[in-house]
Length: 321
Image 1 (tube, rainbow, N blue to C red):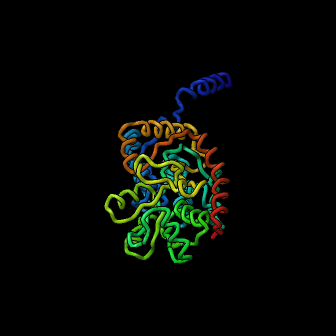
Image 2 (cartoon, helix red, strand yellow; image 1 turned 90 degrees about the vertical axis):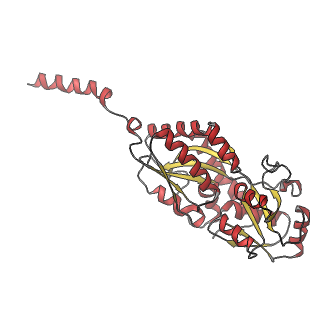
């Protein structure tokens, strides 16, 4: 009996690698959720919805977008941190939630590196300095003069860390003084600016384009060091303010300890859809530049960006809240 038992155990062990299914082979078996930590209409939301449609088709399961905005994106990010590491809850994240918040907030409910599994970087987009059409300035140079002549009277709305640091860094570098007004997202800040409640918003290119084309605002510059191909006639702020630069990025993350085969499948799928003509066209139309990386490169980026945003917030003279 012992010999028979040993033979049976040996056969079982020998066959186990052949019959044991991997997670990736059965994944995904149900709908996936993309948590977007900013409101509908935000740049992160646009990226999330474009990817949800494309990756859902590629993976053969629907991907639902769930907007969980507030607290500089930390509410949504913290939800994903606490989710099961099974590939069914993912975070469409940004330089705000994975880097800037560590300098902007006194308490962050997660570690942007240790509490997440990187899937891949997606894209970048500059901010655009847009101004209420009643502001008596015609270009960036005259706007800078206007801010300096009216210390503390020019109000700028911030709906993300990028828009916050963009505005504060701009004021600091021109040696001016602008009053920051917080919002839950950039779209509501723009709405308030159009209503005359504030004068300025540093808005992502996608949201800014719609207002510029509609002739509802004045646009004075982009936050990238070079002009944007989408708005080639608009100068880079750096042309008037040497050294000024701030370009947010977007990425896909999962909870920590995601099985390696599922992570690899998601990274491969992400890179495949980002290389497609359809996704490229949709993101470009929204003002985004594809900037895809693998998971390892994203992990290195986040580590370096935490340090860089610390330097930026210090230069912008922002005190953590």
